[in-house]
Image 1 (cartoon, rainbow, N blue to C red):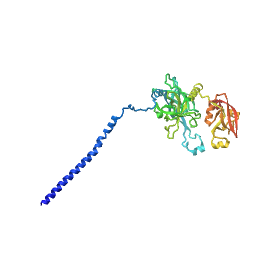
Image 2: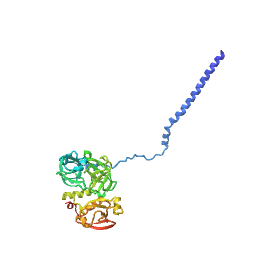
Image 3: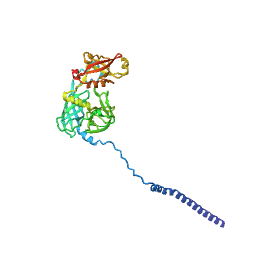
Image 4: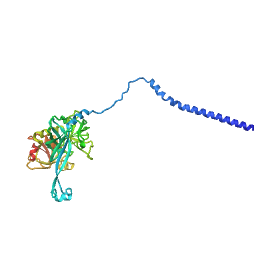
Length: 396
């Protein structure tokens, strides 16, 4: 009995001692984990206290160019243009049927009727007495009525002074005085990468301003007009911007927005504008003569670009130049010795790269002067003298 009591006491004492040992170890373990956590914030404070004092660091905020003053002033010189046109369309239900077209052509067997069509765009006020530049395609054909909406919300009737389909430029006039204008800039001084603003009424949203850069100059062969010498920009240009202003960072007019390259019909970063120097020349001629005085060598009905295959056929070394496809007998060019199949390679000392360049050089040549051209024909080069005549006279 006594032995059982002693054994029980020994077990109780052993259990109590074991509990004390385990508790002590846990306290030591918990203190060893907590100390670094408590001491961690003190280390940076100590390091900061010991570090030598240095200059204060100031945050730098980068901002883009500020166009607020230019935009605020330029939008006043841009108007909305609405043109009501009358288009005569056939009544035939088979008008778009190729089978019907093949047998009957464009005969109005079912008669025709006039339909009203509205064209919307933009225009730039270039004089305080009401002259406004826009695109020819904004004005359209068979115009019945033109409405000009100004930046002060006035709406007035406008009239057409003249149009130039070759460059897609038109000149309008409203009977008002003291209008805000945009001054002319020199488009010849533009450089690729220069900031520009496009101002107009895309999708009928008046006084819209977008910013971009000049992407390229002297663009041609884009299919917008006959005479092409465009500025290319990535400033957003959308339907309704046509005829609006392209201005530089001084608020000067350096182009008239004309068209875009787009697969969706909207902005894709490739827009084109007629350069201001060309626009000024057109405006001056339209105001003075009612039409543009443009030169021609007369009688060349069709010129085309050389393809590698055609260049090989005519024996040309490369595809530079303009191929004469068809021409009229008795014309100035024919009398000077130009013939179908000739490749015009040089005009007044300037090497010809493509037909568009030749057209511009001839159009800009002085009427009444004598031009020197080089033509390539069956393996030899000929120097010819061709008179420059008025394009208007040549059409009559």
